[in-house]
View 1: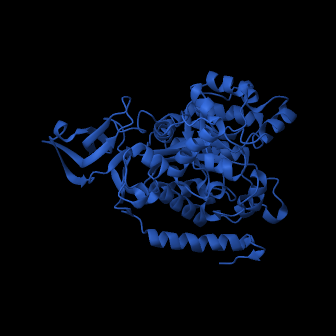
View 2: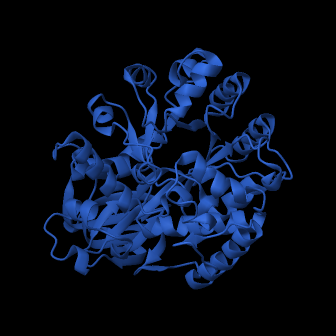
View 3: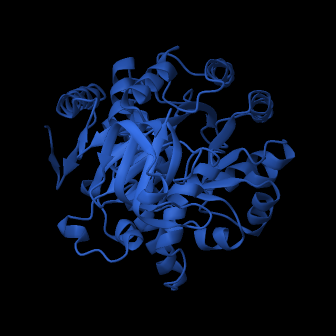
Length: 464
């Protein structure tokens, strides 16, 4: 017999491998966090393990990958609704920024990771631009993601907060140089850690200088880390760039030597033909955030065309303040339905392709497709069990369409990351969910009250 750490039996494997194999009566052997073998029971019957999990006939999918969120926004979930992008920012996220502490950052990241895991997400990219005090916030957020056990690309973010009004001004303004220095520090701390990778996450074209963009490219090349930025979310990006630099955003970034295959552009709603040509030329990756774009009325990204032209497209849940949820299942659903509606073609972005965006698309966008995104021998053991024995998915004939069009977090029975069981039987294994939720509610109330934000509905102030 061959020894392994974990043996998963009696599941139907939706592998997402190059042949898109679906293996009934499947079995997976896991050793040192990696898939040692998988196949039908009779094909790998020689394995025995210290722990065996009977999947009970459930469908086993590779863990989903979100390539964009802002974990610190979890505590301002649902505030500033029914507003456009910058009005929303000014009425909620920016209004609370100066009151964030290490406690709020940690609690936000922890509950963000937990909600992400609940929806079958095993990898997330956190775009952390809340740095209203000197030092420590990056490390605090990273410690929370490690506690939750989710695979993370931590985007050390930066936004120019120097122009905030006096009543919401931060005690400390995180400068562009601070951002660059901290990015270097983090890249040195996590050079070969597949559970925690580092990225640079400049906020917008508005926030950085030309020299800053050039320096980011040098850092990315030196340390082999990726860059991600909000881009073409609204027409404001190009309007600013034309006024400031005399050309649109994408050609301006090309002129600076900033673009490359390690660049992940987030949103990309306002794309034109020149953008498509440059994205293809430099193999720029795209993160599509359909729910956030709808809530903020930013528009609908031309995802159908992106896919037709061969761009790498992934999905992102975006921050809880601009989406209100970290539910990747809902992002898949909206990604396919929006494209069908806008093109009036039911065949675009079919369910299988939506699943690919949420798995392999995310892995490719992060440069991690040799490690995650599918169930294959030699890849990381990141997966979830899809329990269809719920009213919303019963009966099930096609597990892929059921996952994309029907599933909710209640269908996610078990979640495994790096070979470790994080959720079993719908319950967290290592985390006290009730205590963490109570802490988050208490800390978020204090943050909102301290920031003097009024919550109103039907002309009434709601004070919970």
